[in-house]
Length: 100
Length: 312
Ligand code: SF4
Ligand SMILES: [Zn+2]
Ligand SMILES: [Zn+2]
Image (cartoon, rainbow over all chains, first blue to last red; front, side, top):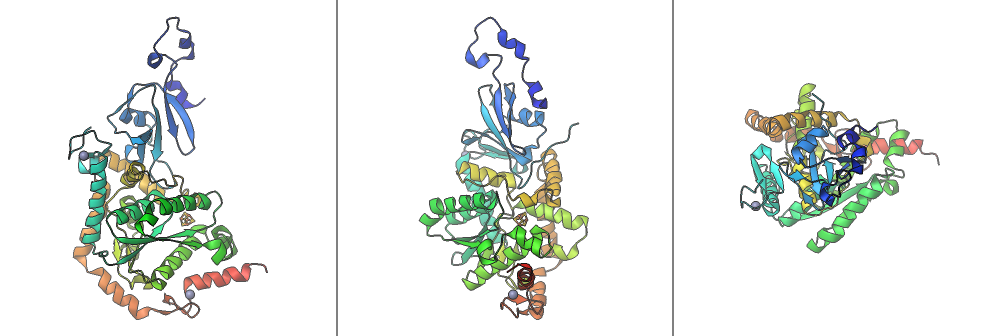
């Protein structure tokens, strides 16, 4: 199983009986587009860009976070409804931060 | 995070400058860094004709864009290497930019197609002569860029090397104490060094992240996945290490590379002595007439070997 999927909430909570407004629905999570290899993961928000990169073990200096056509700064809060791209800026490869 | 200049919402933070900028102020910052580089290293003037080496990546397209925006006379040369899955796409990005932005500025895109001119794609050529692809590629690119610059009367050739490229190369050269190479790490090499056209690196004050941001903010499409041959290169490892240091301690890369440049400038006026040394040993290649230190230049030698290997 993809390690990142563990960051999304337990699927059983989808069956919550009370109707919820869309942004707060439990099965909603932000969609993150990654490269090297190209893939999409979902991560439960809200979360600051800085923390998102940390969770993904990515070095800030080697990445840009893009939402729509815009860049988002590291202190910005991402919501579950957001779709963002984490783009490596280093020619030819991504930089993965070692754990610990 | 707000722009340090105009206090509106910032689009990018720059820890190494302890700053953050909105889009217009960031563009101004980038243009200013390039202008400073041009001036500090006496790269070229308003009247000079510049040939930019473009690859379809963010750095070279951003460089072409900045030079045009600053009002310089800058054409570009793209070398189509014929690498499956990479060359067609990168060429598309270059041509798109040329049509959309460069042409309206009266700038020209020159294209050299290796498959047509040299008879095979770079990978096949490298196989034929039993050399690593990147080394054959380096020989062809150096030669073709220089030939275009000299034959078409460009005053200077500009490449998209950025602070990360130069700091990583410096780290590699220092780790292996490659003293000879240290001399050639200046962002401005005079015309006679190596017998080539004057070569400059106007982006040496900007990081890869800043250049990618410039491309994204100014809607310059570029090829994110660069040449597949670069995978696993030592340079990438050095960049990775430097970026870890940079994230923990902003300013590391610039202190390392700019500090080296300052020390070098104080230690000895290298370019002149090197230029003299080069001029003394250079002569025209017996086959093509381009300057070389040997009887035949390395490009002609390589092509002769490749031709001998190509079945007729
Ligand atoms: S990675 Fe190698 S083959 Fe690809 S463009 Fe660079 S030098 Fe040429
Ligand atoms: Zn501003
Ligand atoms: Zn020759």
